[in-house]
Length: 119
Image (cartoon, rainbow, N blue to C red; front, side, top):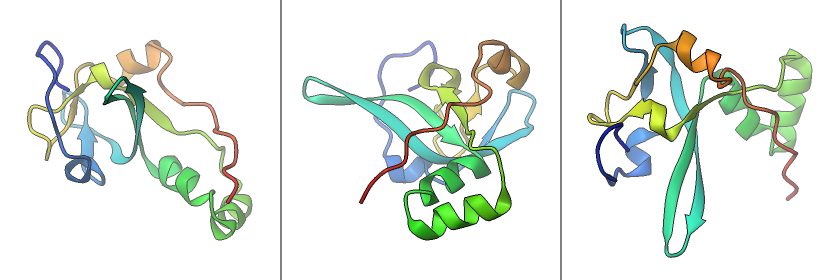
């Protein structure tokens, strides 16, 4: 979705791994995961998870990932960007619609840890 415009279709595989930058061009992190909600027959994006912690969080679903997280002793937090704060006018170059500081002021700095996924 693009702020200030109507709904737009963007293929998920176009976004995964792309670098998100703030309006000043500073790196925020790569999109590692996308969360969405089913609404009727549609699936609408709710947020984008970016950065190293998002990768490690995804790996934590596997036994090896849990082992790595335990060894690194990193906090289990991820940067979560609400959909309305990401400009996808150019899907190859996603940008925040506000500064990183403004996003953090909204309480979007770190997302809570998700419960473990069982296989």
